[in-house]
Length: 295
Ligand SMILES: [Zn+2]
Image (cartoon, rainbow, N blue to C red):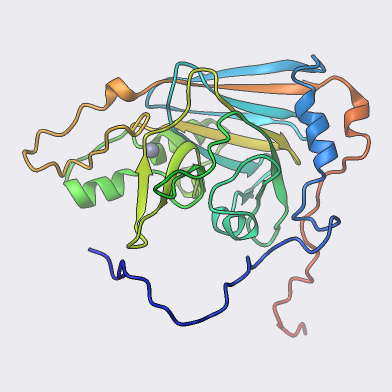
């Protein structure tokens, strides 16, 4: 059930504008397309060097670093699979992806030229998306790819809804992945759901469709600062089946057959001229007093 009626009400209001449109080409919201096109083109041009390769096995998590000025690719190695991505400033994990502000500044699903922004009191692009082989657009149900609307699956909501304990939800996969970096469950945050197709239905309810990725599809971003990233291969796999254990016959659905590994590649750019006009974005310089009077 939803509190939101499916019928639209006509109130004769003017069509609202997007709240955070960039006002000029100098806006920090607007990625310099020339620069990011040049960064993306280094792949075909052979102007980048693979420095790290990670495979995230089925129903697990891995973490890795991406130095600033480097490029990271997430790859559907064997076919459709959703990946839940967390991103931190590698030198200060209190600064991390802020999904809801990113949603407002760009859109609820992200693709090339969108930036993934950090939380307060920082607020800067942690990375800028440079590649998206899915280029899904919008389908007849309003579904779009690379989702910022939802969050990670977690064992708490599973227990709440099904009464079962499950240790391999994305929240847990991400928790295990970041432990070697000194982080804990409390550092895991709202994710970017890479390769995940979602939308809101006529009742304003969140829905998920089957992942559209094919073998070899990729999602690529440029690190604007030193990053620690973690990725979970969602136990929902390609989301062609979904089951919170609430199926009426109690049998549940075996989802392991729709689970596949994801690949991660980190590249160093080998042509220095590509980044000659790039500079690491800095946190916003608000005075930070919030109206408090200092003695
Ligand atoms: Zn998940």
